[in-house]
Length: 69
Image 1: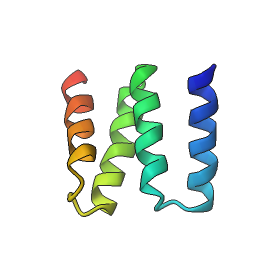
Image 2: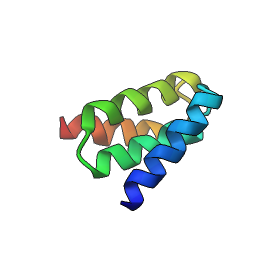
Image 3: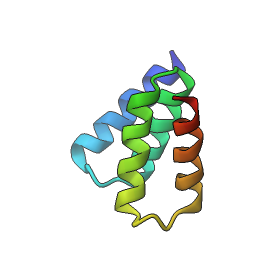
Image 4: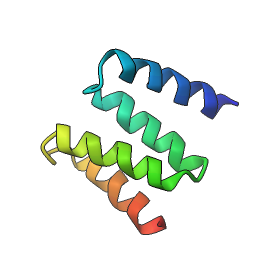
């Protein structure tokens, strides 16, 4: 239930600002935890693109999710 609330909050934040990378990463991590890996990869990839692949933490998250697919 906690994951669901976090996911909803992030989705609402992204509706207001689709370029909000912190919300993308947070939602990706929640999606990863509930095993929605393809959606998690979409979010973390979008964040990496917005950050111009300069955020090491985001890249590590993307790599971890990709390895689980």
